[in-house]
Image (cartoon, rainbow, N blue to C red; front, side, top):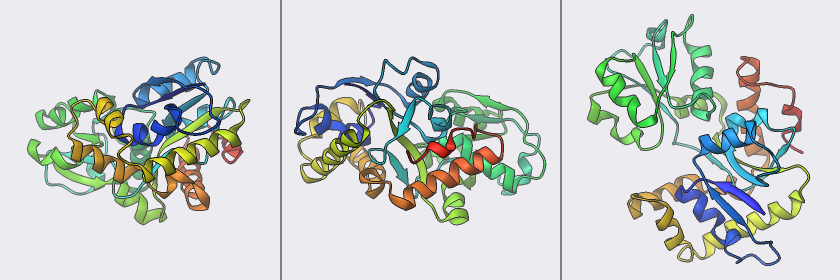
Length: 279
């Protein structure tokens, strides 16, 4: 079975047992390690026969639901981990973004959709140009004045002050207060022709195994985490592997439906397949 997920600690932690023959009755797995932007592209534009199971952004889900189904486990929803909008000045009025140039790391990401939903609610009028650039270039671009604001994720939450930048908004904090839901981040999808019930059962067993035997996956996680400090890797796992990873449940599905439903209402994602979110 062909599966694609990122080399990030949360994914390697979750899928270690599944892809290392530790779950009884599973087939052999052929693993592709790829950044989520790559798997988004593979799911939307690639041949669905080449990958049976993939980790993608929830923001990409509306484009793939005809060929792939959302699994109820293995993914990531989180609290306290939202993207930030940064500027180089002390202004904290969202309307300051009117007509401004904003850098984002991707236009097919949860972070981008959250940004657009926030601006639709909070900014009177339109922002200016949206510029897609590599994640690591965004904070220097804001610092240098090449763009007026930047949308950042991950470790930039903890390092933006080093660039002299200011936080205009924490989009995760806004989303949680506005909806009460966690942020839908990464989804696990499988080809609709597969036995998705069996697959979901195996993934849930893999999550349980990871929690019960955290030492078993330690070397696997470390190998793929590249230069990431071991403590940082563990914090990454603790943040993104939670009850929603084991089972989305009504709260998890509610978060996904609220997120994509709002995005569809704003014309940011197609809505013709959203009725298939739960089957």
